[in-house]
Image 1 (cartoon, helix red, strand yellow):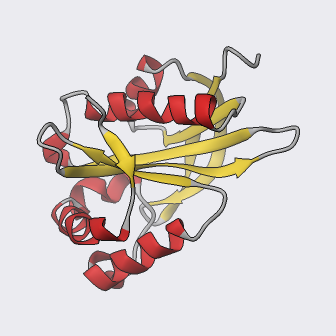
Image 2 (image 1 turned 90 degrees about the horizontal axis):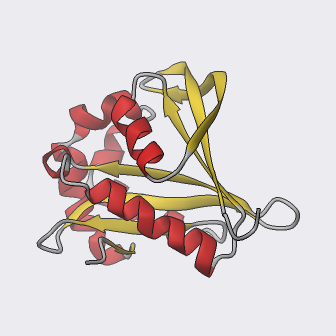
Length: 171
């Protein structure tokens, strides 16, 4: 069963509900957001913005009933000699523990390597996001660095582990 599909503006109501319901759950792993982010208008603006970008492929993560349970994105796609991208994701708290994020990442890896022909995917986690680190490892990512004060998450600059996955067909 496919657990991702391309993000559309039709997903805004479901995403707004999830963002509101999971605000506290996601706060330790996300940048601080203005109040407007948690409104339907704010989500419509965010989705429209990402859909307008040329260097990303955004998706929603679907649960077993086909309902939106989170988002995953291939972003920062760089061509030329680099052929690389980043992946970012979040999943609603109630959807956790069932392998949805792991399967969604597996499907995104296929898009990045098979459809886009990229060589490398990078994912970054704050040091105490152990669940995300384990999920990356289950999908073959390797931790390769510790980056001091790398991302401003939860209102402060935090150290992050950097992970990568190299396309075995391009190595």
